[in-house]
Amino acid sequence: MARKVLTLNQISIKGLERLPRDCYEIASEFSKPDAILLRSYQLQAQDIADSVLAIARAGAGVNNIPVAECTRRGIPVFNSPGANANAVKELVAAALLLGSRGIIEGVRYVDTLSAMQDKAELNSVLEAHKKQFKGRELVGKTLGVVGLGAIGSMVAEMALTMGMEVIGYDPALSVDAAWRLSSKVRKAENLSTLFARSDYISLHLPVLESTRGLVNAELLGAVQPGCCLLNFARQEIVDEDAVIQALEDGKLRRYIADFPSPALIGRGDVILMPHIGASTEEAEENCAIMAAEQLRDFLENGNVRNSVNFPSLQLERVSGCRLSVSNENVPKILGSVLAILADENINVIDMLNKSRDEIAYNLIDIDNGANEAVLEKMRALKGVINVRLIGDCA
Image 1 (spheres, rainbow, N blue to C red):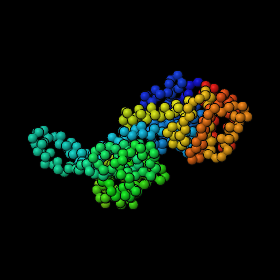
Image 2 (tube, one colour):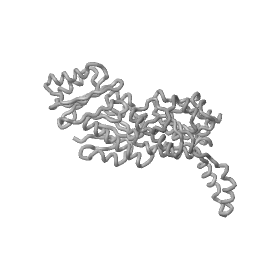
Image 3 (tube, rainbow, N blue to C red):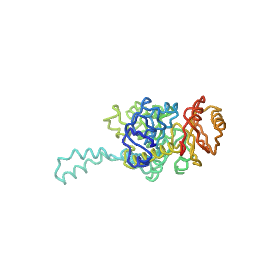
């Protein structure tokens, strides 16, 4: 029977092609979908049917998905970290140039001269006025990068190739990210140090309780006058009132962001873009491909990669029959599941168990199928959330 995948946004065809039509039905309406694939659709808890096994977002942020409710119901939520990293990096490069040179102001000025038809007169006017658009070069300036994950590390590397000095700060730097990072990136002891030493600051953090409003009046008070702040991460990371005050006080020379708001629109010291950080054909394709592949691997094998609420877990298939069990992260549940299998004379060939916060996830390969009565015994165990039989015997 084909698995049903509900799409709540237009998803790149290259991503959907990763879900073979002989095994998957894909549509924008299903009464009982097996999975949901979306981008920016604001998904509500009541929109998630009881039949849904997994949700995948073709993008990095998951603020539009009720993750806590999904965790409670044992539904893994997948995202696509790094798939749009190059697109954002290139836009940050553009923002650095826009923030250092009078490009936008110069273009707008030239547009006012459309009625001037004499080339000699036009050149004379341009020569007389171009000094007001004089900027500064990036070479030798210092860029502070806050958050050194997939995007932040690429921004740091890009700035180095442009001749900038780079300072980085990320208290949650992973081993993989550390390997990606150039040794030329100097590490800041804390955020205040980075803000005090940077000519430009670029933010690349997710929205967490610990990062919401992180860039506040106290932190902005540490910047050297004339600093330029770039926000291509999330609007909520920045205290907007504090940014406006820093601009008024001359602490910030310019604020460049991908998140327009009424209080910022129209200011000469602010450049706003319409949330286009990941709006490239390549980024949309990459995100869709990654989301679809992760969704397929979970539905067909139970494997979990790039989930924001489940532990990462991949187990090579050694049998046609596999159990996936999600449960509350408390003692003795796995033992009870294995005891049920033993009582039914079902042999375990291979297994893997991992936990993350309040949830545990298990993959168990067995030598023969388990009937529905056995599965119901497992589901009846206190603390068990979901039990699924995967494979040829399902």
